[in-house]
Amino acid sequence: MSMHHKILMFFYPIFIIIRKFGIMLQIITPNRLRVLIYHDIPAVEEVNFEAQMRWLTKHWNIVSPSEFEAIMLGKTPLIGDNLLITFDDGLISNRVVAEKILNPLGIKAIFFVISDFVKIETPLASRQFIAKYIIPNSKLSDIPEAWRNMQLSDLSALIEQGHTIGYHTKLHSRLSDCTTGSELEDELISSSKCISTQLGIDINHFAYTFGDIESFSEAALAVAKSNFQFIYSGLRGNNGLGISPLAIRRDGAAYQLNNNEYRIFNNKLLASFLGGFVDFRYKKSKSTLDQWCQ
Image (tube, rainbow, N blue to C red):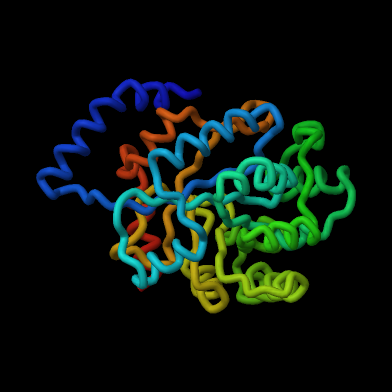
């Protein structure tokens, strides 16, 4: 855990007091709509992940993707503390925790998948893809042995269980590096329609890769919005009133060790992020994204 994370947890009680006074003075909204991002949930973290989901259900209203859509489109009022759960990249552990943990708790999530990653059939090829595209410039030895992709059958099972499949590009490409319309079309449109047809569903949710504003572009947004109704960033912030469905904010819920394995944040640190106590760090990036949406 980094030093700034430790500092954030240290000041957490003070932040809570500030927020309460802000709500009393009506300078801070009491209504929140946040979105969490998870990636791989390794077997050693399943117990912690379940405990975190149970903790979140006590303090937040966990909304389904359809409920989230209704709030973002103004069809349902934003009242209280609301939270959507999402997963990026389409790793097999996502299905495991969906069936073992999310389903028994009644939590429905969005799983953002990479279309060419879904096609892979062997564990070795899966890790090779990750080393080349998902964690660029990595060695195969840098990729945890347990990491492999969900296939179409896994996605179909998640759909049957009431979850939602979203799109996460064709090759996990950094869209700001796509300089031509044909490149963007290939990454965002043709491949997404292919997987949509294979699954027999409409895919309305898209999360751009890497999540920072430098990894996206106005040109990429223009192409993406022609095919998707909801577009997700990795910029921390509250959603709801005044936030475009094309500029959805999300909070990372885990960090990576030196061996690339994920560990979820403890509840106090996660509460600090969900409380919006570091949202100011993303103000400029969110302003840029909002301008692109106009």
